[in-house]
Length: 296
Image (cartoon, rainbow, N blue to C red; front, side):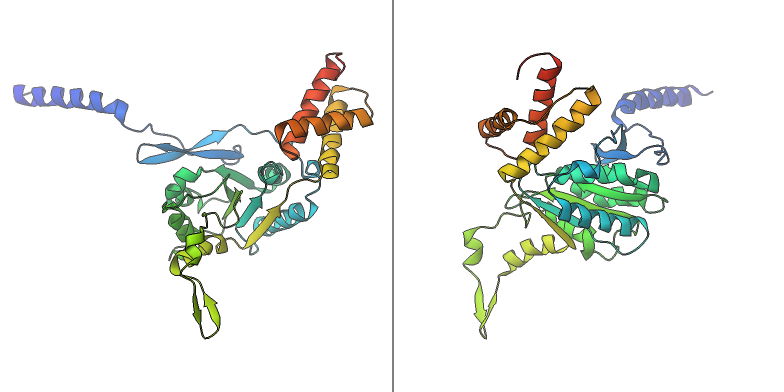
């Protein structure tokens, strides 16, 4: 080998050795027959689907007091799994009322029928076209799940989401659906100044373009489901359900009493929240104390 060629190859190997740690790892495709859920993980300018180990112990029957929302989303999901027309869904409302839990319970209910769940963070929505491209030829049905979706004033990422949902020339494939949760109905904050430029035209009130742009994002979701703060009785129903479920699993004998309900109400008052998450946390604390033999 010529000396110059040998020196060139040595330098090339040295350069490649320095570049190798900077290059993304080669990742094998996921086996969706075994993998039930994944999370889109950003890596450099691209990303990959990271498989998740998910628990399927949350059932639809565990969601108390949201019967209408549960039935509507379950029906929409069945349509999707059967290859029928179905809508992207926006679950909005008070925090801790079961929005995310409902999506997870649907995975447990329908995993055997081919449903798969992919979590994608709000900050990674610009990668949606890359995610969809990896899924479009697969036999499974995928729900892209974006939890706590909202945008601050001045952010433009929501336009990417609009395009992927409905507004681009190449729409999402038939085996992909988006379910999102949010505390806001319109996802983008609405300000008083937005209303200053509304116009009256021939007796009709017309919003300005900024307002139209913000409302148009929520309009891309064909199914809106509203979740409201719990009443006290609703909260106690959820407390009783979770205590009963946990006590049965642990072999603990228990009965509902006025004192238990008072403890649950004080627990919620101390946290300023009367919702499903708070009820679940109280149930864990109460059952744990009973199992320790400590009077709660």
